[in-house]
Each structure stands twice: as C-alpha cells, then as structure tokens.
Length: 360
Image 1 (cartoon, rainbow, N blue to C red):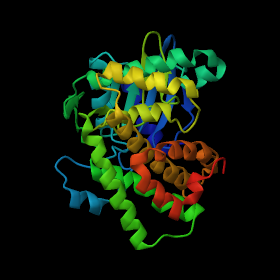
Image 2 (cartoon, rainbow, N blue to C red):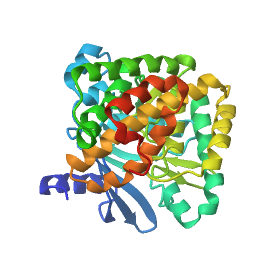
Image 3 (tube, helix red, strand yellow):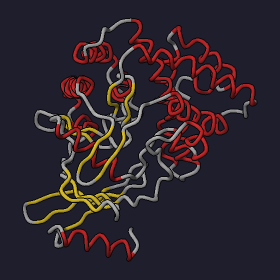
C-alpha cells in the first residue's frame, strides 16, 4: 500500500484529471517496483501506474560511456529504464502512432511518477490459452505477425511525447554480458560451488565471441519482455505492455522471449512454423545465420532468467520463481545444443552442470 503522502498525491492526480470518484482496485504486482490500479468510473475504465522515479536505481543516460555505465552498476550496464515514466510514455506513444496496441496515455504527471493509461482488459495470452488451449496456434501466429511488423517499422532513437523525452539505446555487448552475468552472480552460488576468477574470465570471453553472431542482421526495436503474460488478445491486434526497457537489438530477441517462455510451454510442433513465419514477415532469410543468432540470443536470455529467478527467490523472498527453473533450464539446454555454442556448453558442463540436468 502507498504511504499516506503518496496516497494524497494519487488522489490529487486523479481528481485533477476527472477520475477522483473512480472505484480503485489494486492489480497484483509483477517482478518490478511499479504498482498498478484499475479504475472504474460509470462506464469508463482506465489503469493507474504508480512508478516513483527513485525505485529502480540509476538508468543509462544519453551519452554515457562504457566506463560510466560500469561504475554505476547493473541497471546502467544493462540499459534498463527502471521506473522511468518518460521511457514508458515515449515508447507507448511511438508504438501507438505506428498502429500497435500499446496503452494510450490519458494523463501524466512525470515529476510525481503517475500515469493514467488505457485499460487493455483482462485477456492476456496466458489466461486465454489456459481456458482455450485450442487457440494457441492462432494467437501465436498473431503475436509473430506483430513482431514482424515491429521489425519492419522505423523507430527513431530519440523519442518525444507528452512533454517527455527518451533515448532508445542499442543492446550492446556490455548490456548483453551484464545480463548473462546474472547466471554467475545468482544461479551458480545457489546451485553449484563457487567458480574461480579464471573461469569467470573464460565465461565472459566466450560470450563476447558469441555476440558477433548477432551482427548478421540489422537491429530492430526489441521490447525485451514479449511473452504470454505480457501480451493481450485484442480484437484484431496484440496488446502490448512492459516495453519501457526496449532497445535496438537483433530481431531474434523478442521471438526467443515468445517461444522460449519461462512460464508456459509452447507446443513443440509450432516452433518451426512460427520461426519460419517470423522470418518471412520480417523479411529475413530463414538460414543458418539466423538460427545461430537465435540460439545465441536464446542462451543469453535464458542465462539471465536463471539468474533473475534465483535472485527473486533468494534476495526478494519470492520462492515461487524457483518453480520455473526447470522449464528455463530446458530452453537453455536447447540453445546450447547449437554446434556454434559448443564452448559455452563446455563451460556449463565444467562449472554449472545442474543447468544441463533434465527435470532437476
């Protein structure tokens, strides 16, 4: 619950924008520090985002060099927007202007960290598929079409909307490695013995060498968290949320997020057709270079998730995230089976064999 001072700020904000008498219902939280409420006023609905700007640490400012990012820690290294409202506002607006179904910004108080958003409803892919599993192919084809369209769209690096400005960075080697290193920092100490400084250096070298494969294709906007619990089944469109950390990245990144979902299994016989569909709609040749980049991006993302889920369980006292580890390990193993990731697989065999245990 917000403090009495924060609650007073929220009430003032809602009153100014005509929602002061709305019925407010708290939305269950996710892994972030943002807080949401659904508002109902007569026949109108909206969503309140409560995102104080000091909750998620230092972000990566425009023009910050590698040394500065290194000194400021993980958020700056990984180029995370954190609770930044300008990032959310600018990216939401950029997406809606191009016809994508991100929430429209109804009102904003950037200084106070408060946003009033369009309510996209309740039909998250995950919930719809739990009730109607027969819709999986149809929904995932729509999601892949959305990703193909985002990749084909042109987005500026410097965005402006509703008085906010945001610079969209690139998913560079520092960001990629900072995320993969979460595996070293959290997963390894929890499930394995500690590793030497020499082994850690070897880990970093292997990753940086593999990142060269991501340069085989032009980058596009990657929302960075595109999966069944973050996208909505809307009439004719795919609703988008949780895109404030978007960067310009290899086009496989969001496709990996969708198909190698940490929270649900996508039918195995859909994977190949969906990958082929994405390449066709994105205008990319479905060849060895794309498959190799997909494996690298998948391995990097799953290493990060393994680390994050242990961190959420251990540091943040959310032990239910450990229940998802087995599925993420399985995805990680699939990615590591690519022959061009043999060195990385060898490192895992030597220092973190639990990550290769089926059903462990």
